[in-house]
Image 1 (tube, rainbow, N blue to C red):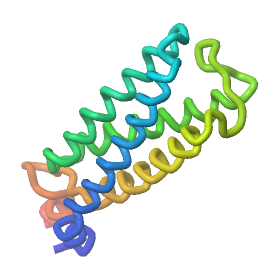
Image 2: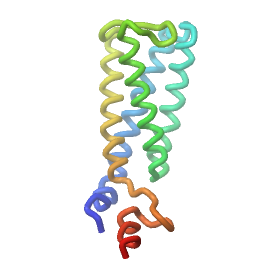
Image 3: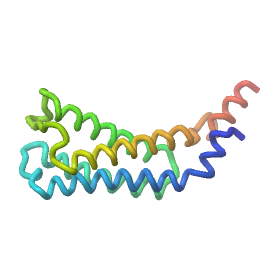
Image 4: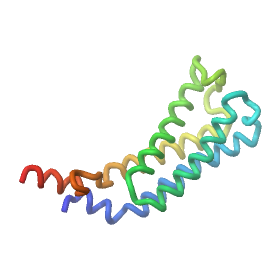
Length: 148
């Protein structure tokens, strides 16, 4: 057995739980911002509640489904959030929305902590997760089968 997959078997559940908590934490920060007034911002307000719903759904999927799909979905969410966070702090804007520095405080810093932490845990999970190969074999077994 490949050492990479041995780590998957041993640490998958705890790392998934940590990743799910971090993804959910990012969603809760977005909910707080939405309920504190971002709901009134045209076009951007609805995106905050979409982030909340997606965070909740992906956090549950990460814990309930031991598969690579929720890991990839959650990586897309947290990386998209980080990109939007970065762009919103430049001279460009996100649909007419712009902020500066680490305002609002402490939500901006909390968002970065949750999203970067989640991205790291999710990247580790993706590295460990056996991806399907030919005939449903784990990819390390599939390579051995092909080489024969």
